[in-house]
Image 1 (tube, rainbow over the protein chains, first blue to last red):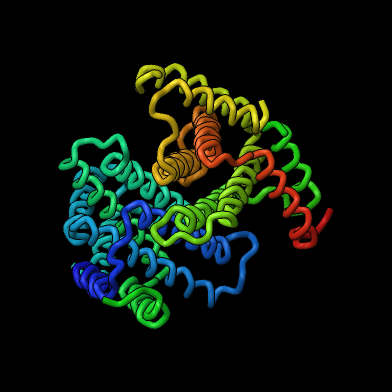
Image 2: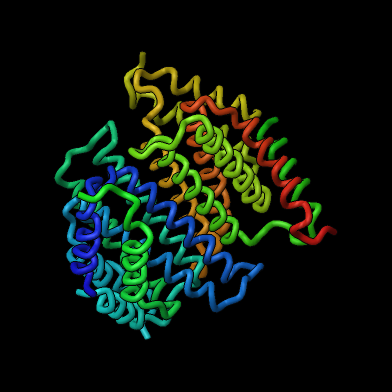
Length: 104
Length: 104
Length: 104
Length: 104
């Protein structure tokens, strides 16, 4: 499952429905909802009042899956290639941050 | 570039440095920083005081690339497979939301 | 109810318990949870799939109240005066942004 | 400076300009920008790569002041009383959470 396949899988799911992609601000608000749900799971698993570990680890994964879904929605609606965007980020990391941290 | 390759590319970059992955809460705080940067670009491009369109569209893509990078960091540090997590989200979407919206 | 009284009311409530203020990163994660809950209510009330208006308006208010509570927690734990911080923001707005927008 | 006075001070500032309050989604996006700026300052001050303490403490205060400003904007635009909303949160805390934590 590549970033392009992920975007296509989301587009296929969305394309079933008349509704189509939400307006950009509503997708962004949905994205922050999921960030909030991720925050809750991080506090459950790593906070000073931990819940049991096993189930929670799974839930952090679930929230990350939902985050990827919503990022694909935003990218698709703007005709952005996440593969290219991510590649650009990696190029930037190698160029800009190359000497910021101590190498092994 | 697949989700697994993206995670591996991030791990390769991180592995150059002594520092390794940041503590989970610091990565989460970094994630919210990037959400904030995405919000700024969305307001620049779609808000009532728009900036010029061409450059900004690129910038939304850049922020999404940075978001994917940080999500890979969080996933790697927790040994989470984004491919599996995303697949689980898609399965959930097909099951739960199948009848929520009007089909074409 | 002033900003100082709000901070004192929160401190009085927290002081009942052995636990005290949470670590800063956990309070910050809680803050993003509440931002996510606010996002959900904004989508419910203003999104293209609106719920009924009356109850939802109340809920946006509830989320803002919870936000103020968590901001008071963070401020108290860092011995920050929200009154002074807000005054500084207002001073900045009058100085910096004074000529940015068209006056009436 | 009370919560009502804070809301009035923001309204007075906004009222100078033709523009008025931003659309709700743009104010919400601005709110997440400020959450992101707060995250950056928390990482600067408390992360494993701390910057010097004195200046940063001031900056967390600044971000909290900006947060209060934007929350006042959202509340004003929706005719929400932050004083009442906060009071309701405090009432809820005393009722619901009264027995959740160990009392001193």
